[in-house]
Amino acid sequence: GDSVTQTEGPVTVSESESLIINCTYSATSIAYPNLFWYVRYPGEGLQLLLKVITAGQKGSSRGFEATYNKETTSFHLQKASVQESDSAVYYCALARTGGYKVVFGSGTRLLVSP
Amino acid sequence: GGIITQTPKFLIGQEGQKLTLKCQQNFNHDTMYWYRQDSGKGLRLIYYSITENDLQKGDLSEGYDASREKKSSFSLTVTSAQKNEMAVFLCASTSDRNYAEQFFGPGTRLTVL
Image 1 (tube, chains in turn yellow, green):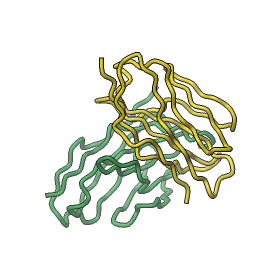
Image 2 (cartoon, one colour):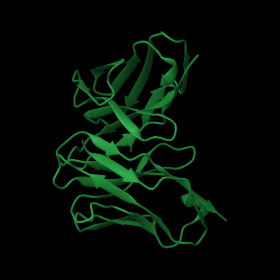
Image 3 (cartoon, helix red, strand yellow):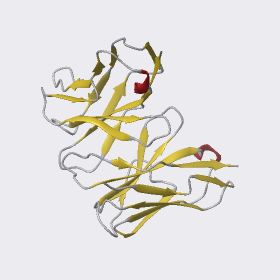
Image 4 (tube, chains in turn green, purple):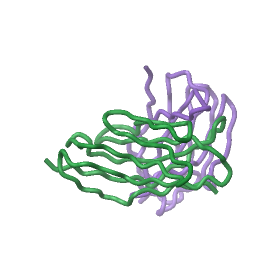
């Protein structure tokens, strides 16, 4: 079946440092899945951070970026300079265009220290 | 904008008990989902519904029933609570299946005594 593997947390970085959370996917039934990053901030519900539906494209939101790389089947989340408010749990996910199911990774807890 | 409401926020039950979780959305979305999340793990799909009165099984449907009697509501029943079912249950909805962006509720935390 389809699966998503991401960096096991917690990941701890200091404020203003750079960040990368790795995500790789296996989509045996989907040639070009849609890829997503969701985020859960403390005390809030899970929400979409960014999405990319075309291979080779980059998505960005709130200073985060992720590039859809079909050669390496990866969708790593990066930020050049993190803030304490970025502390949250981040989930990588995939879905098939026109489909209903979304496959989520196990989540990566990010802790940003001041 | 819209909102997804889940009730109750905390649910405590006895082993073997039948328990029902409720979800309401006012997005007017067609598709709704129930996921289970165990501590430190990802979301696993239990049931989803693409329209009123439709039900589709996910990967984790055994031990659960679901009901979608109205477009705005989606209920999940744990048919016989087990001690290893302590988890958070998340409800979600989406209107655009092409990009599958989902909107989530705050969750129901289930504890079985």
